[in-house]
Image (cartoon, rainbow, N blue to C red; front, side):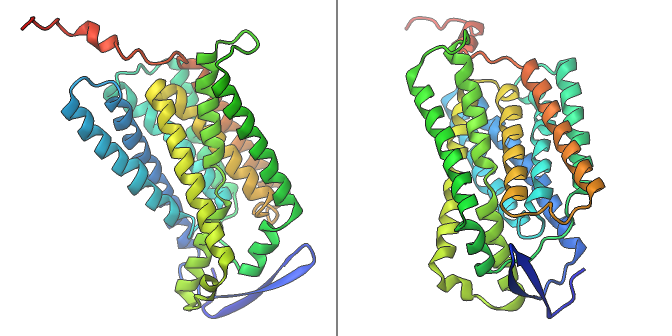
Length: 337
């Protein structure tokens, strides 16, 4: 637990940065962050299922209501909860909780969207649940304060430049593939399109380092009353980066849910987001450096369990695009006027 008016020094690659903080919540802050992220997953899934239902429902009035409610929950309430959670807990600890997206999805989809819950989907969901719970028990439990100098040292480094370049190339290749509309390695383009949308959107959603850094600065400023970071233009670049990742991944995810089943898109999206967030937290923010060997191994074994569950869920789900005319066949033909 942090002491009030405490100061400390952190060392990053031989350079020291002083941290001044008034953190009052201590270990309780981590619990608040975890609770907010869990609430985020529930509101996100309900909102996305409403958007998915709006894409196939025949009644225009009902479709509009579903879109408004779905957009409010998935694009407003859920992001607010997620942004706030990163002010209280480390990214490496919050990322696995995103796996609860598929837990809520597998529990609700049979009743809300009429999608069947098979034995494989139940097994996959169980793996995600236990892996997420296991990981949060062994990840770093305390959110460390941040300084603008320390964040610049991270985001203006060659390692971050290389990390960003690799991801830009991946997204460029994905975009070119979506435009080509060609089959690859015997796999139909319509199936691969769903995979690319889910993995691409999830990978972008997992780039949480800008969000984590910005919320750390804001939280520390609320405690200390020092808002000097707002006078630095670099802080606004981080805010723009966080907003860009959030908005674009939401658009990609919505495209996937309109065209494919939620049980196919959501697991892959969540898996890609979890992997990207955990790797970025470990590689860029160095959040796993303080873990001992046992906790480090236990943490990544939990991540592997989550990903394994998501793979099972993806294999159990249909990758065929939605048939928008499927519901029309079930409705009685209207009489000619």
